[in-house]
Every structure is written in structure tokens, then in C-alpha cells.
Figure 1 (cartoon, rainbow, N blue to C red):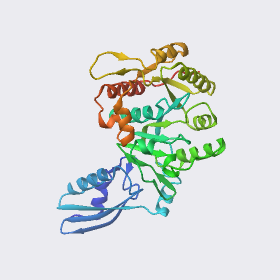
Figure 2 (cartoon, rainbow, N blue to C red; figure 1 turned 30 degrees about the horizontal axis):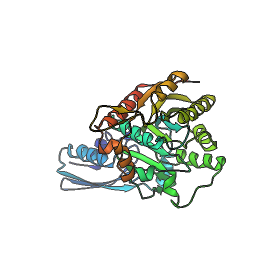
Figure 3 (tube, rainbow, N blue to C red; figure 1 turned 60 degrees about the vertical axis):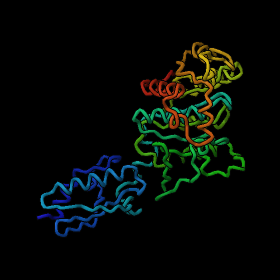
Figure 4 (cartoon, one colour; figure 1 turned 180 degrees about the horizontal axis):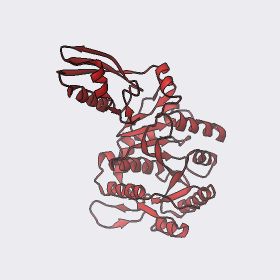
Length: 350
């Protein structure tokens, strides 16, 4: 005979994949009904936006249907109330950055060198390696990730938690989601610090292997404030081969070294242009600048990205290169950068 107790015993083996606890221990199973071998029950998730909810449903059905005498199972999903959540967790375990394993901040000495393009495509390349990745657009004065990722909606909040938007298997947050695109943002450092702390503490980032953070360009107050808010950040510095860019990047590297932030390496963007009808690589902005800087600063050169029309097109149409043409030559460069980053346990320390 099928009983509620047998069903609960079977469901003790089913875990919430993100919380790694039994759904019975988490008090997620409710309203069990049994009739002629058919079982109906409700599973109350901590959030209905749980990305693993379909797996939970499948695991619940499988566990129940393995019970002798059960002919079928029907699972309805709902969300826990605020009171139920508060009884289980003083603070939701998926809220904030406690479960984020590594932080990668992408910086540049000046604007216009393709920092955001690098941040987006490196995050996507890491995700293609099977890693769980988040992307935080912390460029307070020019947040362009919403446009470059083709996102127009705003994140929603649930029980005081902000739920990041998800696209291309990335969890994404941006200052741009909350700003009027036609009005400039005028914030001083302390306000920026407060806002970025909220983006780190009040967002349901969940269990991530990497959180990639796109910093503001330059060496001003916002970059310093944000970098100081990110725990154990590892830095990727983006430059172009131009002498003026290299000079600014050198200042930025020295600034971050003074802040005791470890540096993973340098990415040289706009390294060269190669016509589709020729093997010749044309160094439009100079040649070897990133490699030279890497030697001078004793920092690895992670990769050299060519001038590629697909990078520009991808950013304009909201479908990045690593989604649209991941197997292109430029896509292979981003994959190699991601492989190098994921294999490096530590950056170059000051």
C-alpha cells in the first residue's frame, strides 16, 4: 500500500541541487494526495525562478514512481512564503556571494579599448567550459552589457532578494538595468560603493564557479571603490597596442598592485586586422605592445584579439561572438583565454 510516509522516505533521497540538502529536510514537500496509485503533491521552492526546478520535478517523479504500487506522479510547483523562508534561513543561502568560488575583474587604463567586449566573451567562453558563471556590469557611467547582451527587461525582486536575469547560461546584473538610458549617472565614490555592495550582497547569485565583473575604465574613484568591494578579485587588464593605451594601462596595473589586487594577465585587443582574402596580418594600432608590457610588468599575456567585424556586429545586435560564431578564429582566442584563466589558481601578486 502506498502511504505518505513511504513517499516522504523516498523523497529524502531527492536534493535541491543548489542547496545540496534533501527536499524533505528543507520542508519543501506539501499537500501529498494518493488515489488509486496516482500521487499528487506540491513542491515549494525557495524561488520560482530556480534554474534547476525542472530537474527537481524530474527527480521527484522518478523517486515516487519507483515506489511499488505507484502508477504515476504529478508535481505542482509553488514558492515558499517569506515566513517559511525566514524559518529555514536567517539569510537565503543563495543570496549574495558566499557560494561564488572566484571573482574575475576586467579593467582597462582607459575607455574605448574593448573592455566590456572582453568581459562578455571571456564569461561566455568560461561558461562553454561547463562552468557556472555570472556577469556583473559595474561600469557605473557607461553600462553597456544590457545592449551588448540584447536585454531590455529589468530584474525582479523576491522576498527582498534581487533575482539576476539569465541569458546564454549566464546570470547577469548591470547598473544599466536600473538607469534611464538618456540621462547620465552622477555619483560620487561612496554612493558607488554602496550600490556595488548591494549588487554583491542582495542579488541571488547562487552557486557560481566565476563571477566576472566589468569595472569602469581608468584609475578614478569608481574603479578603486568597486575593486575594493570585490573579495579576492583576480584582475584581467585590457589594452590595445597603441602607446597611449599602454601608458594608461601601466598606470592602472600599478594602481591595482598598490591595492594588493592579484593580476591574472593582460589581454591585447585590436591586435591586428586580417583581410579575408589574405594571410597578411596588418598591425593597424602598432605591434607587440601587449607582449612588451607583459614582459615589463612581469605579467602573463593571456591572448591577442584581432580586429574582427563579428565582435562589433555581435555587440550591436545583442548576440556576442562566443554565441554567434564561437568556432571562428577570434572565438578560439577567447576559448584559449578562458582555458588559461581557469587553469590559473592565483594571479601575479604585488
